[in-house]
Image: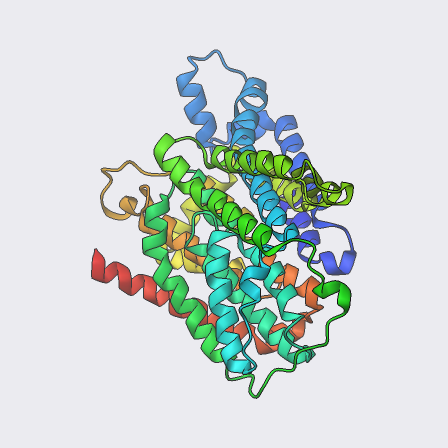
Length: 455
């Protein structure tokens, strides 16, 4: 199982070389790990490393079988957790794409009119940082880079700006419960609460973005030269009132999700689907008397057809594979090894953050959630770091969310920027990796000092 996971992940990391979509490989390793687990379950579980199996047999009074454990207990248990993440993402992606279809983001981008390269860099950095907290880092990166194409002509400048966007988007998404997939996973899983993740990770994330942007500003100078845009890119097919309306309502739908969870204690994906349903009803009623062309492009039905389903399937496959490793006991072994060798939540998370620059942070966080169970509220000493809102989970949100910026392939935002701007891997490694690393370390130090001052 572990060999299949590592080999498959190698194909995912080098997608740009083998030209096989990472979603296809993720689905393959997700299916194969469960198949191997089912076929060799008796031998695997007899080793005694699976805490899930131990808990199941102790509570089932000897009436359970290995097959029942895997097919009826573990598989559906993990599928419920994975599905809640996927439905959340699909709802969020649809809402954001709908706002974009109505040109709602133009309300923000039209206010950017600075010609100073350094000043523009700081404006874009701040905009990206806060937008990614409300939307998500992937969508924010795509939106802002699209804007940059209308503001900058020189390729080198655009690459620097795009790289800064990756760092700021990842930093901005880390402190928000809806800003990054990994933070969403921790929030949905109950490891952190919305209020705590904002108050504990905001300052380290801000320091990360500020330090990185300050260093980026040393690489550019002078004035920006704006390109001449073709007529079809400047055409406005929605009114100003429509754009404001969709931007406000879409943003409220996203922001209301943490409030919905706090009030009802229901999973966040239901809040996201509630917001989507309200937008769906409003837009359908609004477009009833509009042209057939508007109905083909501006309805939720049309937008759903354009959301990035391969990305959703990638998460399904990789989270399924990690779930199989968790159920079989691989992650328990890894947790014990790291505890024995390090016994320090800060060191463990720093390593996870650096590794996330090489491999995707989604499986790393999923693995961490499987390796370390949430401790009881009355826990003391080292174990108290693993209670809900404990230092381990909060610092994990920061490290996993921002560590991927160190390499361009380390985050979804980086991969998107690489594809949109055709950024060279080695260029990013030489020009940006050190800046991203220094920002990452500065934020980590801020988090550590923050815990010393307020604990």
